[in-house]
Image (cartoon, rainbow, N blue to C red; front, side, top):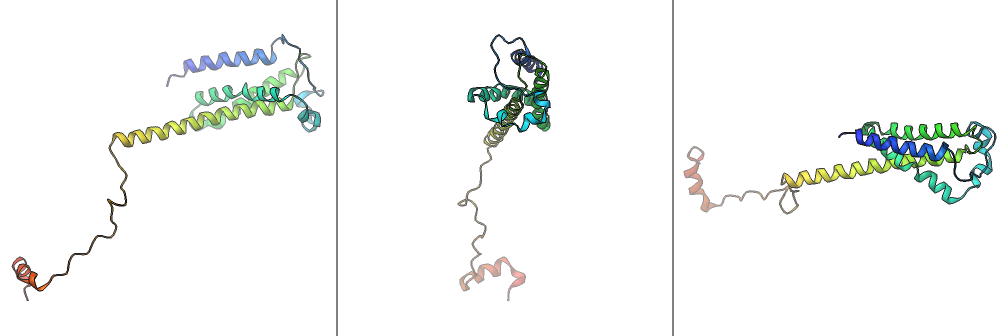
Amino acid sequence: MNRRPLGLVAAAYATAVLWATIGPAPWRTSGHQLDGGILNPAAWTAPVTWTTGYLAEIAFNVAIFVPVGMLAALLISRRRWPLAMLAGFGFTAVIELVQVPEPERISDPRDLVMNTAGAVLGVVIVMVARGVRRAGLVAESLRESRLTPVTDAEFDPMPEPAPTPTPEHEPALAAALPDRAA
């Protein structure tokens, strides 16, 4: 698979996410940030961190990072999918760290957690899609090779025993097996 176009899409999407999260905010940013943002241990345990905010904001934080996880999973080898999750976490961590000193931005542990959850969801979507695709390819291969499963009606594990010779069969047996004649 040629990953260059996918890499360009990923770079464009990352640029858009960076602009939306650390670029000049054309909207008024409101919220609560403890001094030091995500670097402040108290921010992680403060009730205000986890109880304030709108459901739409939380959903947006997850949704904006689903494509990040999907693109990372598609660009990284399928055997290294944990790296795609780590890339999503790293990307959002950098964003939150850059937001710490910015007066117009809010560095929030909840954003870090929700963005990471979105990236993980994106990776899971790609992994499930790959599994479904692989299962479909296996099923198609079986159909093409004309392999059909054996049914119980076609397979009898205990064949019928051979009939026991009767006196009327003895002349035929004697002719067929002259050295065993009694």
